[in-house]
Length: 195
Image (tube, rainbow, N blue to C red):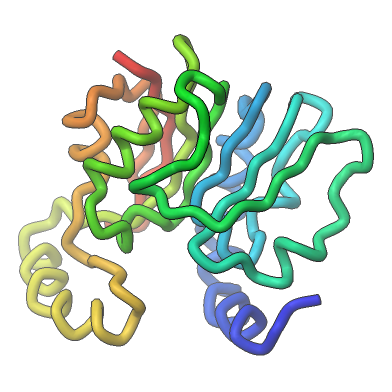
């Protein structure tokens, strides 16, 4: 059962999910397989998109696990773990995951390079990341707006950073982007592997 703050967040996100994110989530989750780690699972929005028959295990993390994650009806035959963890310090063995998923997470990770280095560490050779993030727009007037609004926005939105360029940070952290789509000016979705 969801608590009030989870329901409020999901209600706030409903238009964005309905008109922008739903189709992108469906698309990237087609290839998520093996031993899977989801970072920053929030209210469990991604749970309905997994093709559970392709998963060997699913490990779900967040800094504070919501009741929605803990009480979700997972497939009985799947190895499921829910763990409170920070992206910058993942409590998992090196080369233990086939796929890592994060959606709308790295805007608020304090040190995104440290988080992505941890993801690289826990990925097996040939492993891939699957992501959706909001990023700084390419359009110069919009970039200025995002930069100006960022200081106040971070205070109101729990550390969410409007001016982060997560696509560049992913590449600079040693990943090769295999697929990238930019949409609605300030969002990206994609797949990347260790380069």
